[in-house]
Image 1 (cartoon, one colour):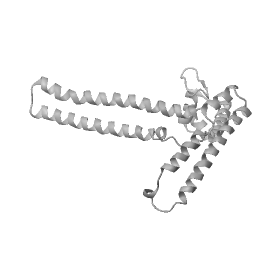
Image 2: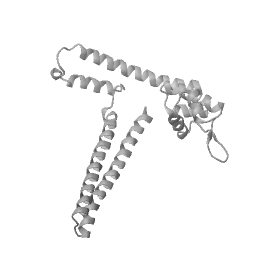
Image 3: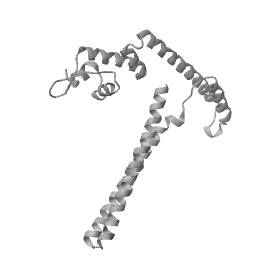
Length: 213
């Protein structure tokens, strides 16, 4: 069957299904001649199992291990129970600290955060995990990088247009015209290359954080 039918029967988007294929969780056969994916009932059952486990927030690595038989279902679930129990303890501690802060009247400006931060540091030394803002806020950096690059490229494109217009209405020597027309394009390419490198670094950090959890 085609991917549209699979979407309707399993309740997953084509984007999700192809992502699971890319991650090696699914391997539908290809039709001879056109190379189109041809999903069968076994693929649908695999996708339903994947969907179930992902809704329980089981990591992809654990799902892959269970699908390949490297882990049994009970082994995988027991591992995940340990992770969930750790998260529960983390949330309990975060909830307790939030309750303590909720008992302090007045604006945030009147709060001395040092004592609370010291308590959190002590708990982290004991194994409690709070949100790592240095990793979480990387997504905001990625959005800011995109916005800055787009604004920069738009400005360069506008300057390029103005320079081309100036050349066509009031001609200048060719070497000067080439220099004026070429330098914004060089800057734009440099900005895009720098953005690409930065996004790779951000994405790698997010993937590392995901794999660690």
